[in-house]
Every structure is written in structure tokens, then in C-alpha cells.
Length: 304
Ligand code: HEM
Image 1: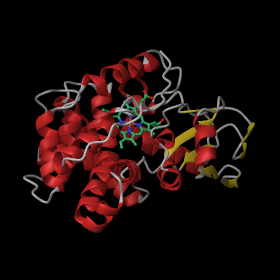
Image 2: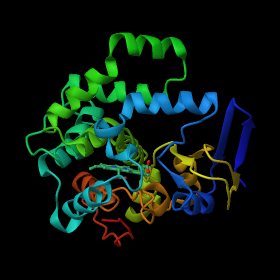
Image 3: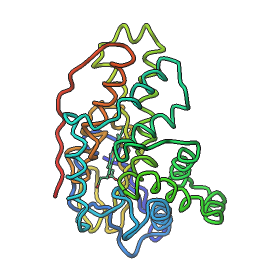
Image 4: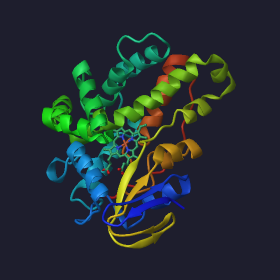
């Protein structure tokens, strides 16, 4: 069962962290990225914070769009197809630079190198700079900050809109590219840091197979947020219209090492990079160590 905190008119949140419940709720028909008009106060504040960072309506990043938003599923399917590992959609030079970096010879910060590798999935000439990396940090801070004073300062200085413009410019205006280089990049960085840790810990790397090293590098967003659109019984407990459901994907991935949990790859919101990311990590490891592993294709379902 999930953990529900409910105070009428103030807050209604259900936290879910077991892999089984995350998988079940990721695909539950009563949960969406759509939000009911009358939300309890805290739910409304969380929603406002997400809207401010990820946009709403026509400016929304794809990761903020409701399930049946016109064109969302088609764009998701198109990106998934474009990123198929068999097409080797990545840029070799940026993976080489990452391999050098995890071997302890970074030419630039790891964050910038990861951002460049991700950016080049969208724009072959993408060049990560201190400014694009600061923009990614600003989006991350915008999503995480609970401190009203920080939020006030962010609003006053318009850090987030400025960051979104910087990131959009670098990927030719592609909103999936903004999501990738501003938000997903932090999860990807976590995975690359785990590869670097494994390589630094020679004893561990020698004990583990390449497949196990790559499995341990699997990371996920800390939380994926959904809202219940109507009252229902779910495998994690009952929800009311407007209950915020927090799928703790990072914790559930730690417990399961299951890519279906990390990328929600069997749900309507499957990450379009669910196969590319493990393939890129395997490429980086191979370039750093000479050890190759063939990855089994991961399941995905996207709705055109
Ligand atoms: C370790 C790396 C990554 C993980 C674990 C991950 C995981 C996820 C998850 C769980 C979602 C669903 C979020 C939600 O429903 O609210 C998602 C959505 C998405 N991801 Fe990723 N992601 C990663 C990297 C990437 C990269 C590198 C890209 C782009 C190249 C990408 C593009 C997207 C997009 C565009 C969506 C929104 C899909 C839609 O609903 O239309 N992700 N990702």
C-alpha cells in the first residue's frame, strides 16, 4: 500500500515506492498528467511549481502533457523510432569524451559532457557551455524548490523562463530536446557517475560482470507525478479526484533494477530514450574499458 496524506482542502498526496505498485499505477486509467480544477492547497502549490518550470498549454514540455493531448503520443512514437539504438543515433565524439572523463581524464565538467551527448541526439552541432549547464540546473532547482523564498527569487529574476529560452535555442526549439537537456540530463548524469564510480572502484568492477555494472548504473527520476481524475481504488490504495500520486521511481528502481520501472517503458508515458540510454551507457563503458555487452531489447509501448 502507498502512503497517503490527506487533510481536507489542505493536502491529498499518495506516495508509492514499491516497483509493483509503480508499474501498476504508471498505467492506471484514472491517473494522468491532467489536473482537476479544484485541488487542495498544497496540491495546487505543487502543480503551480511544475507548471512554472515545465510549462502548460502550448509551451508545455512533452513530459508535462496529459495522456491524450493532441500530438503527444505521435511525437513520442516518432522520437522513440528516431532514437532506436540500431540506428546509432548518438554522437561518437561526445561518447568518447565521456569515456575519457570516467577514466579520470575529464576535459570539461561531467555535467556539460553529458548534456552535450544528450543535446547531440537532437542537434548534431550541440555545444554544451557553462550557460546551457546553468540553465539545466535552473530547471532542476525550479522543480525541486519547496522554499517559498527561493521560489519568490526565482520568479523575480525570471531564471526559469530564461533557462528554457537558453535550452530551446540550443536544440532549435524542440521541446523534447529542452526536456532532455534540461531535466532528463540530470538522471543521465547520475547513471554516468555510477559508471565512473564502478571504474574507480577497481575491485568492484573486477567482481561484477559488465552487464551487472550497467545494471547498477540504472537510475530514474526521483519522482513522477500524476493526478487522479476521479475517485477510484488502485493497487496502492484509494484515491479521490485531485489526489496527487507521487511515483517514487528512483527508489523503486533501486529496489528492482528494472528498466520498466526506471523508464516506465510499458506505460503510455514510456520514455522515448528507454532503449537509447542503456545502449549509450554500454557504449561509454566499452569505450572506457574495452568490455562490450549486448543488451536485450527493452519493451516499450507508445500510443501514436
Ligand atoms: C537515465 C535516463 C532517463 C530516464 C531514467 C528517463 C525516464 C523517463 C520517465 C520515467 C519518463 C516518464 C515521465 C512522466 O511520465 O512524467 C520519461 C519521459 C520522457 N523522456 Fe526520459 N528518461 C531518461 C533520459 C531521457 C533522454 C536522454 C531523453 C531524450 C533523448 C528523454 C526523453 C523523454 C521524453 C521526451 C519524455 C516525455 C514522453 C512523453 O510523455 O511524451 N529521456 N523519461
